[in-house]
Length: 354
Image 1 (spheres, helix red, strand yellow):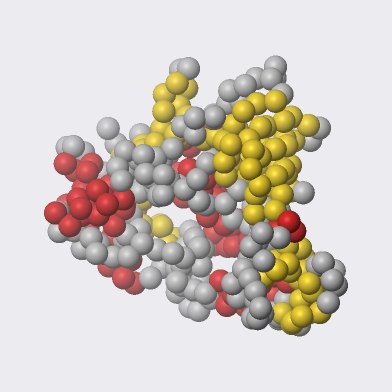
Image 2 (cartoon, rainbow, N blue to C red):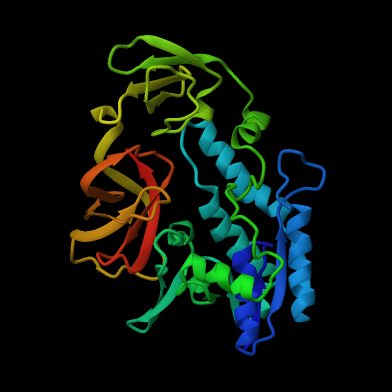
C-alpha cells in the first residue's frame, strides 16, 4: 500500500510515521510550507518544524518532500479569513485549510499518486452502509472532527488517521519510548495560517485600526473604546480592557464600528438556543434522507470536548438547529458541525447565521 504522510514537526504526525513503520509500511513524507520566507506576518514555516520533520525522515530512512503551498494558501484560506473578519463574522481558517489546502491542493499536487494520505488528526474513518464516514476520536478532548467537517467523500475515503483510537497521553508515551525528537514538544496553539504569529497582529496588518465605542447593550452607555470591531468576536470575554466584569461581547455594529457588551456570567444577552446553518455540506451522505425533518442530533458551535444535544430542522435555504440547552456566544461565520445522536459520526457542517 502506497501511503503519503503529512508531517508537521509536531509529536502527533511524528508518531503516525513511527506507527506506520512498525506496521511494515514505508510511507513517503511531505511537509506543507504555507509561510512566506520574507513575510513577518505569516511565519508558519518555522525552521524548527522543518528540522524535526527532516530528523524524523532520516531516523526512518524515508523520503521527505517540502511542498510550497504559500500562494494557494493565501488565495484560498487567508483571504477567506480576512474577508469574513472585515464583515464582522468569525471565520474558522483551520476548517478551510483542511478542506482546501491539506486535502485539496496537496492532493492535486502530490497526494493523487498515493493510495492513502495519513495525518496526525484525532479522528477515525468508519465503514457503514457500504460507505466511508468521518468518525470521532476515542479522546474527546483532542477530537478534531469539527476541523474536518468540510471535507468531501473523495477526501475522507483516502484519509488515514492512525491516532484516532489513542488517547493523547498514549501518543506522547509512544513518542517518549521511541525517543522521537518531537516527543517533548508542546502542542501548537496557533490558528492554522497564523502559526506562531499573534492573531491581532495578523488582523492589524491587513485591516489596520479604527477607534470605536464599547457600549453596554442593556443601557446604551458608552463604557470604553476599542481599536476596530474586527479584533472582537461574539462570546469573547478577555481582552476588552474593561473593569467591573466579566464582560462579554454580544453584538457588533459593523457599519458604526460599535462593539456591544453585556456584564455577568448569567446574563441572558450572551445566550441563545437556536441558529440557522447556511450552505450545509454533507461529508459522505445525508443519512436521514428527505423523509425526516425533526431529527435528533448532537452538534458543536466551537472546538470543545462536549457534544451538545439538539434537533435538526430542515427549512428553506438550509437547516435550523434547536439546542436542548442554552448556548453561550453563538458566533455567525463559525461552522455549526452536526453529528449523529451518538456523537460517533460527523455528518457535516455549515456556516452559522442568526
